[in-house]
Length: 304
Image 1 (cartoon, rainbow, N blue to C red):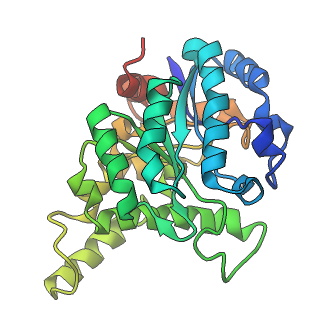
Image 2 (spheres, rainbow, N blue to C red):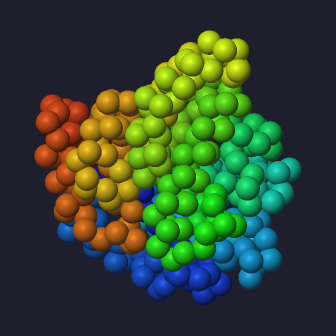
């Protein structure tokens, strides 16, 4: 079954209180038509990160609005969607409570996090109970790049450079900080899925390993008990509508076909056919292609 690892839907209350997003981001019927036309059996719904909390008053408010509305979609459309719940990261005491509510009462099967929150990255201690819960309950965590004040935004505010460069490196730094804080080692069963091929992490594999080896020889960096790439190859990445062969090849080299998930990035990107074709054009086995296009997610969520 073809499964989309990266798609978005937003309720009207979030759209109308955000910049950039428009009514098309709240058209679930349009998304279902696209899925049917493209042969997509199911899709993950995750949060693209917005600035709606600035008008609505808090991320907690956004989390409850989003989760309640996506919960209605999950109830109405059965097995067509898998929901990734937003967490009230501005109220760490409530985070586990909200993920329990979302998974036990609303039908969510995953968690949706941003790569950072106002400069606080996912290595912060407040996320540790979430990682513990994720391991115990086998709840995957989908990580989307932060679009509000990503790394570098305080120095460069540009409508092209911010999404092209700063979003990518916010995700890259997020992965790096999870590495250096030992979270990948301490929570090895957490299924982290990073959008957009994990930022630049696949490109930086060699530099990470060689620089770590050099600095470790000088006792200048902590002992990670393994090369950085040993940890990176254990995360998952999604393709986010990408069609560039070189990006696929870098991800295949680092992670292999069982850790890559095809994603459309709908509705931000709408050329679904080209994204699927990019996978089918890879010089890998048909089984590996099918795993990227949905088999890996079928196993992750035990779908039938």
